[in-house]
Amino acid sequence: MHQGNTTFNIEEIERHIRTYRSLLKSAGKLKIEKLVDSHFGMKSILHAKGNSKIVDVAAFIYVLLRLTSCMSKVKNIVLGQSFDVFKKHHFSHIDAWQEVEAPGRRRKMYFDGDETLVVYIASVTDVDDLITLATAFQIEWNKFHQKLAKSQNPLHDVTKHLAYEDLSKIQNIWGADFEKFLQTIKDKAVDFTVELLSGSYVEYAKATKKWWQNIQEKLPDLNLNNRPLYFVSSNTHSITNLLTRFVLEEEITLIDFLYKSKDTNLIRLWKEIESGDFLASKENFLYYLAKKYGRVNPDFLKKKKEKEHLLGIHHLPAFHYLDIDTQVIELKKLAQANLDKSLDLSLSKLAKSEALIVNIDYPLGWAAYQVLTEIGQNAAEIRGIYIMGKAATLNGQIGDILLPNGVFDQHTKNLYAFDNALKRNDFNEIFKTGSVLDNQKTACTKGTFLENETLIKNWFREGYTIIEMETGPYLNSVYEFIFYNRYVENQFLSLIDAPFEIGIAHYASDTPYSKAKNLGVRNLSYEGVEPTYAISLAIIKKIIERENKIQ
Image 1 (cartoon, rainbow, N blue to C red):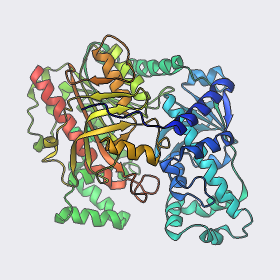
Image 2: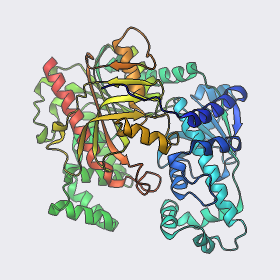
Image 3: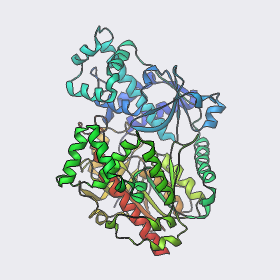
Image 4: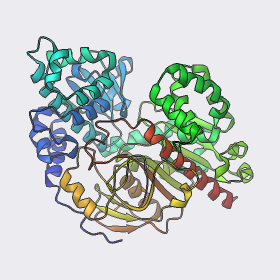
């Protein structure tokens, strides 16, 4: 693999980034209105109709799903790395505020009920993400406001400005509050100010260190710093579900819940799985149902946690620092697990293992570097690093599994080559609903809005077929595990002889070339379930096989 022309001309994107970063650095705060022109200048592929009088519904829905529903009330957005930072700047009372969330972005946020939203940030990527989301939100909300401002009946008049399909998508988000949502758009424009309390690298490092210290303090008996670790970046449900397999005892209860829900789409899907018309796993479907059932049945979740406890699975929710939940799993207790027979694994040797799995809810962008670096600096030994996440694909379909062996990191301009421990053959028996694309090349970007059509076409011509945000920062950290210096820049770097396994797999959640099939206008729903569980199974197998060889 050669480096090729990876330094494409992205001057407009870089200019936009420099604009808001310099304003935040010099003044500590900025008006989003000052960024509109440079935002338009990027020609973001996610905001293709931004500089148009018509409402860009795809972009609007994308940001609605990734910002809290109280944004219409917000005037001031305050960013900080930790509770200590907020306290230092006289926001020590934020725990008493209303905690709010966004359906499409995991981020700790608090609203004072008036006009101030405080947001925990884990890295500079969070700043990039929030700035671009807030800018797109303000642009599209105010366009919509101008169209409805003089309306006597917004619910009726909205059909003059939006196509029926676009209208239905927004209705699906707001549900019963849709009419109230339209009235709010009619009544007011938005005008955000963003304040960054501390943008220093030191504060990000402090927040990360305290995040890890909190995990150590909550699990003193596990002695994390003196045990071999397998690091996994995935989510907080799929791996533990597959280890406990708790749904197998609850199938009758869950299917009864399904039919009582009268969800015609899910019922149809279940019938297709039962008949074999859809080659999905029954067990995976039950996990999907279990998440919905658990929301209305606390006793069900209690039984699940009891089974996790028996298998040495410890949950550590985020607290006051990075909004990254963590699981620590004792491999020795997995010797009694009832794993999927398709894995064809012997578990008896695990009873002698002292190793732990540290599984984190995958972070956004550059926070990946900070988290893995902090763990690496404290761990006695790293035996494997496995990364699962969603990504855009330029040559596959939504729901496919993507296996890279090369990554270009836009942060450092490094191009990494590595031997991916996850191979196509690992998915032969466990993944039937899509394709597995191996030997792929990843372009790791700075942000979802920080890409335009020219950039993506250039990447594709260079053979890059995956676009995502975490593997570059992760591999910058991996570099420091192997070499004597900190990560470098503008280099071709081989990690093929790494002293531990590196396994990276993505499931395709987005196809940028198909404007109707991006996460701005649709939800992943069940499409991500099958690849997620297949990748999780493959990671479990790799860890156990590697540990069996060591024992």
